[in-house]
Length: 475
Ligand SMILES: O=C(O)CCC(=O)C(=O)O
Ligand SMILES: NCCCC(=O)O
View 1 (cartoon, protein in one colour):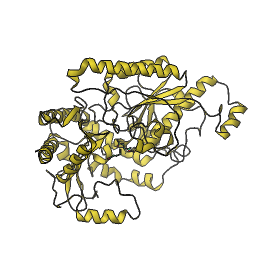
View 2 (spheres, rainbow, N blue to C red):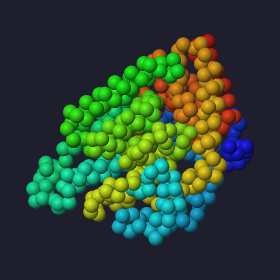
View 3 (cartoon, rainbow, N blue to C red):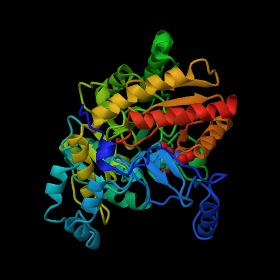
View 4 (cartoon, rainbow, N blue to C red):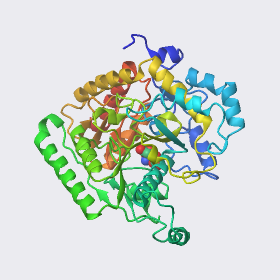
């Protein structure tokens, strides 16, 4: 690993510690502005009011001039820190001006440099075994376009070369079979795959996301509920994973060839940072292959380095790569990777919308990837993650109100639980008062999602804020 500090190289003026100068949080100016904004925009989920001009590297600055160490990074979406000089450089380039001023309808009028842009950027970053890409607009859109690719693939396989029948062409206009499909996507309990209609049907993390929205009657398989520490619970966890695999096999039998694809996150993120072993994923992959079910790995949150691999599923050593891998967040661009040409529908305009991606985002993704490679940021994240995990393990020793520290060997993708959601939420809001922006997931988990420029010195600051906050709350 290079010995220099990437954070110092990018951000010579990055703050060295948080600074909270308001007596309550959010401070008075932020509160006032949020109130104004709330007249026209729903601000009820707002934790702070940011000043993105002043934010630098791993530190986010707010409206009152408070400076917080940001370990949430826009819901895990800032790869290289705030105001990264290399991203700013491309942001000010001619290529970016042209991309922004002339946003193309990519499928109909791709630019003469889109192919090269993909080759040099997003495709260079492709997971092992994938060499094709479809670009989309968001994580939900990435997953939904992946679903459509799977449904069309399975239908084409059944048609076996025949063209659409009159009955199919007519029935589909009434949303009826056989023109529509009775095939389904199987997802996993506590999984999160987005909030659009199709993706929301596969999201199973919290009722609040789903209430009042029509949904497909698609199957849900159990995801392992592992016990920690892993070393002390090997047998129980093995039994838990076997039972989940057994139940998944039963679901496959019950649905009798109707499952077009499964979608699964390498680490269930929104749903609580729930992990499973490589063995579990390998077995799942075998069952999908045996049953002609496509496997979509949702790397929207886990992808792009945070787990100490470029793609989290590369920890599993699968002998057959997933059929599709979806991405978004840290790449700013969204879409899915694949390798089987049959996942491209048999006719144009079937997988389509006006934009089909965005060259401006592909330009940013290319820079992000180049910087990751140039500074070996994935290896660095693996090592910083180990350092942070060890420090947290020591800090939490004897503190029974914190459980299930997890994410060892998974870069900075670390999480732990409190006994209740209200204890967790008190911890998070007190952390902000103490200068760290950290978030929860699942019922009562705290998840860490720093950028890839988070280093040992940032980990030290975070651990000392955790220490201070826990003392304030628990004595
Ligand atoms: O909180 C997360 O992990 C996912 C964020 C997101 O995409 C959502 O809540 O819609
Ligand atoms: N899953 C939506 C984001 C939740 C949060 O930041 O609290």
